[in-house]
Length: 311
Image 1: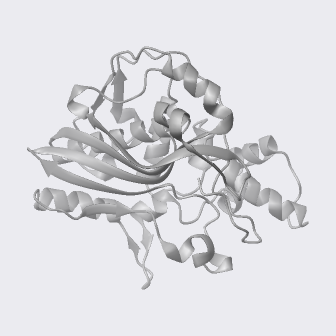
Image 2 (image 1 turned 120 degrees about the vertical axis):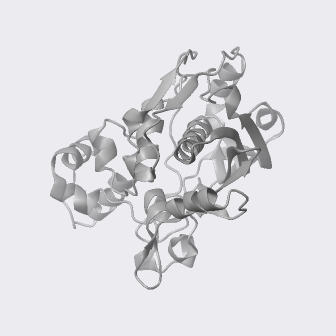
Image 3 (image 1 turned 45 degrees about the horizontal axis):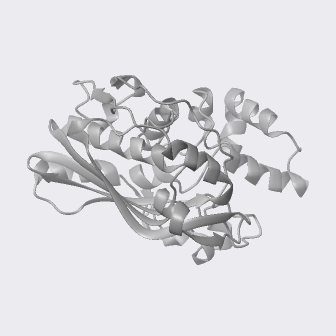
């Protein structure tokens, strides 16, 4: 963050018109044996981390599960899609609050309007193959690590050009961003490590959440394999701060970090299908207070298939 504030290049995204300052190609590393990297210089939304990761791991792509658990980090995307249709007279107009309440209470409504096609859960657990199969990349990668601890191919990707940006057919385009687009797991010194490649990263608002999510994923996979955790390696493409977040970022930089907390996964979780959010115990988390900042809904593609925000 300090480097970006001092030297970042100012750019304006044509999709949403917001300015960012950023750098390209950076990496941070965490030794997970020394603590769980849930940032302490501001409070990170742990409930959101936990439920969103379970949402991915269980292969879900409808926001109803998140809404029913009072996690609203994905609300904006299906609502904006609905609102565009409503402006064209295809659906009744409604406020975002009414829309989300309908998603929560009306299963039939949620089945139609709460779905986010080609998002992470679908790509991880049921990648759409050309022959109609759903390929479970994550289960395959875990089994590769189990049967061949020396493997170099335990990769899970969410980046499918068939559904992305102007590469996609208009009727098949993914209207929602794929930002953390590929990760690889590896065993070294008998420990499980995970490296994430994130093409576009909001270092102030989004990245603390991403760090916690993928570090937790590494813990879960290690637990399934009966191994200890090694490193979480976070590799960035474009890493940036939104121009209107600079004061908040400076406030965070002025704070003294506290020791990282600890995470423990219930020992009975020896299979991906067994994992539930209640199997995770977080202890010793002592963060500074939250720092509020406006969320930019980046990456959304309109129905007209116009250029979108890139995250």
